Length: 338
Ligand code: DGY
Image (cartoon, protein in one colour):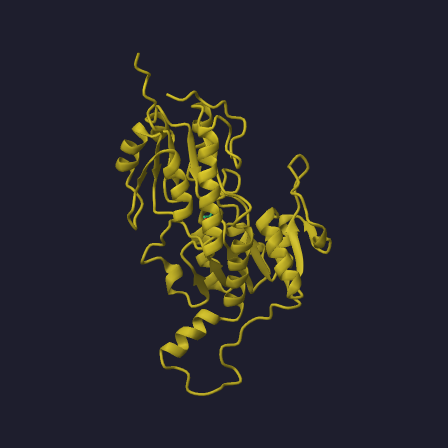
């Protein structure tokens, strides 16, 4: 009597990832890697999802309800990111699909970049580098390229989860005072590490009024979308600097350009924009007091390898019949394999 042949599981990976993680997935499933610089277009995603048991996705892949509805075998969407705003998590949960993500391993790398942007903006490092390369360094000048002090100034953190707290630790090491946005009653309080006793929780208005630097560390949700707009810029200390390494859409970009042009904001250090990539004619690109990096907060070699390892584990967990170890929708009732 012939035994039924068990089909190998199919995994679609939307970009080349760390080889060690890839090898582990190869041992367990049939893998298709979209090996291009640009992400797969929606049509390619749709057709890949039609036969996939798992997808390992990136922040650049929009996985909406239509995609999810056209994926009858799919049991896990494993995002190579901590943020899952590119995925319709509610639709996935309704369909019995687990959503995996990669918190923790990118915390320090992202805080490093956020603090680097703060320093680059405060001390005009990118602008000074352009000055030198343009052949404008003719002599030492007592009033040349003056920036702002970092030590003894105040940093206001919007978002005091793991990355916000890692940013606070860096700031304290530089002799800064740290304020953070206090959670309203009813909201879940982040676990706070003991070394951060000197940080003070305040209201948003107070944080904006008192901070020399404001750094954003909240996920993009309906509540946080455009949470920093014209009203908030008007409340900021004149000459403050804004740092954003979370998501561009947390800030009203047109209002930010206005605040930068009027001098209300002395500068901005941005790893994220809305949209991404930034449009070539975006007014932000004309402003010397803005430092922009192309969404590289977690882009250290070690962090990206760890993210790929967790993203692979999240898929292998589901293939073994359990929820991903890092699950963004732990309430999901996982659908049965087809
Ligand atoms: C994340 O993890 O959400 C980043 O934005 C991508 O590294």
